[in-house]
Length: 250
Image (cartoon, rainbow, N blue to C red):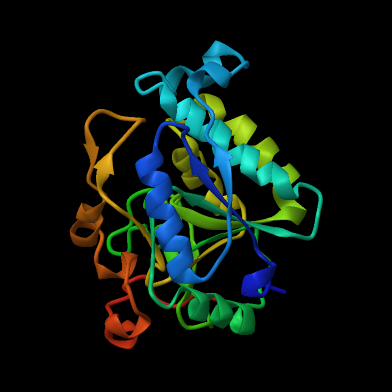
């Protein structure tokens, strides 16, 4: 069963020097009525593995620190029946965040590994798995909840503690082929159980990045992917009239 909102163990990832981001996420958490612990983000210098495993990430070395940070938060619930909620410190939470979590708790009854709270994925046409699956998502028999195969919504998601050990091993296998943790998850999603609440209930603010160069402009995904990626309130998105070209498959 999907947990109640208050039973989720929330963490947010934050670099020590990004006090601006700490202030931002604190306001978002207060707005959503949830409590979360801070995870001091790891850096490239914390990586102790083989150099060949991070070769593709070396164009932006702090991608490695991001990878390490996310997986370290997963470890918090490894081998338990608990669920961990992972937020990046530039996450933007919708106004009806708890109501949507409650909806998922009451309606979602499928086996799952990762549940994305963002909806950053391609609807029409597919991009990541167009030559294999022919789609990057599919509707389910539960309104607002989609199975996803190409989501890159690391700004906010849930991980099922029962499957963390399996997920960590799978990520380790994909690491040499990956440009980052979100890329690895895109490669893994066709083989694991991943879902998303759509329209997205977590987005990401634009701002200076410690991973890439300059300012990250996440808001452009509203245009390039479509309005399904984010709605501040559920009624702002016309779900029933949206053109879901992939159709219903479950």
